[in-house]
Image 1 (cartoon, rainbow, N blue to C red):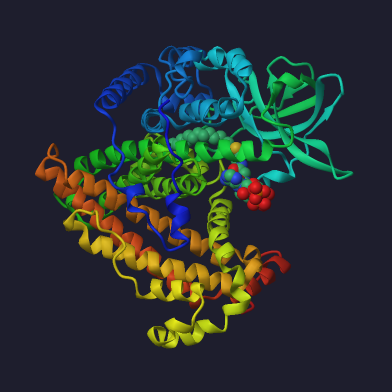
Image 2: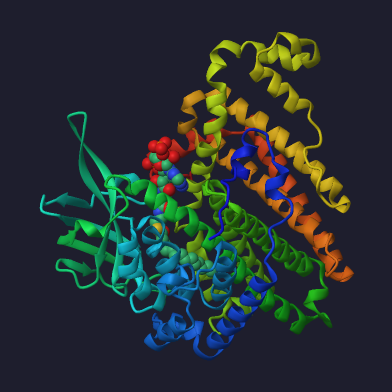
Length: 588
Ligand code: MYA
């Protein structure tokens, strides 16, 4: 691995109203060797999958046949990220994402099995394991001889990951005994390598405190058992089971990272896992757009193929715009990670939320284009729809990720505003007459006014994207002000207000979408090897994408001030108290 300097998070800087252009321009690109690898691997995956993967049959029978697992393993697909010295392909984040998206375009259940294995299952070992631990397990994990699973979720612990109850108790003889239960574990039962997050007891200043520690539990361990295979709505061929630990004894050498440091380990695994999910959504969107295109060309009504009707065209375009935007966001992130971005938790949460919601909209539109056919089991749309729905839920629900994004993002500015008590009184006057007040204001208020007056924050975009770059500048400045306003209004209590958190998250997502699209499109427009026709196509996609992001941003921003948040609270309490809507047309 080449040495890289740690880079600042692009999205975290948004919350300060800042953008460092060197982090986003030029758009990260594949080297010629990487391009060749990506093409070679994609075509090998496509060829194997065309002959062996039958998503419809897998779904009907709710199983991925053993010989398919074997074939995927022979292609090296179980060890995409494992270093070559341990028998893997050692793909960097961008290549990993590209290959993973190819698999996801073919079958969601197969992608889920492979993703649970390597995007999260053995990631803790990869990130934090000792050399001995890596030597012991990675070669077999990379070859597919053993399959991995990530065990965090429990019956009482989903979004609130810290509240897990599974316990690992030290036996003071170099072993730990694990007791507890994990729920909805992908690859449960199939796997032989479980990354299990458990509470361990710690003595902190004389008090007993519980923290989280990660252990590896091997298949076949005494006391390890599984529930029935879950009967899921979608991705049915992937194995999902409860995993039970009844006095499972593991040696301390199975502990990953330091004792008590498991929460951060789990979060870091999920941070990169969410990116794989975003890239998987790109692969799935591409395949769905192909289906929708074929349908709209082949289906004739009123003597014309339906692709000639405006409302169908509008759907095809929205699908392509979403795919282009998600892909730009994912590969801006992976490319930044390759360059040295280590604090990528905000970016990957953004890719997961935007990608999963886009995929859901894309399959919905494809279903609408296919109309009656789309609703019939004979066609793949309903299966793709069932398969796609989970992406908004697993690897962190989009709700908890929005809260995470907003709360983690405002941490920096809230530090800057610690002196807020002293200066709050300056703000209204300053806003009335900013220039006159500059001399008497604190640093904080000056910064705020500078943001209000700032215009262009980008310089490196292609001139065809001038308007979009201006959008970005306006949005960034508006966002920084909203962040500060929110902190001023709610202070530390912001943690209790999810509606403004959701809005800050949506504005950050719109900003990331815009900058990713401007950067990628600039690279394409500035290239000598792209045809004019393709340049024209991406320029139009970029314009629609940035316009859409701006609309979302503006609408969300206006809701920061003008909203019915109080009514939402009041109405929700009423609905909950009445156990439902409770109003009947007969009575009212
Ligand atoms: S696996 C299960 C997924 N579960 C989750 O994602 C759980 C969601 N919950 C959370 O993420 C956390 O509990 C939240 C924090 C965020 C709510 N990176 O006080 P805190 C640090 C780095 O805020 P909490 C599955 O579904 C934080 O800074 N650090 O914590 C698999 C703080 O540090 P410090 C982080 O309020 C399905 C400390 O932690 C992060 O308790 C299979 C405490 O923070 C972070 N992100 O909750 C998938 N978050 O103390 C297969 C927090 O130093 C995939 N911290 O200040 C296949 C895909 C294929 C798809 C196919 C498509 C077609």
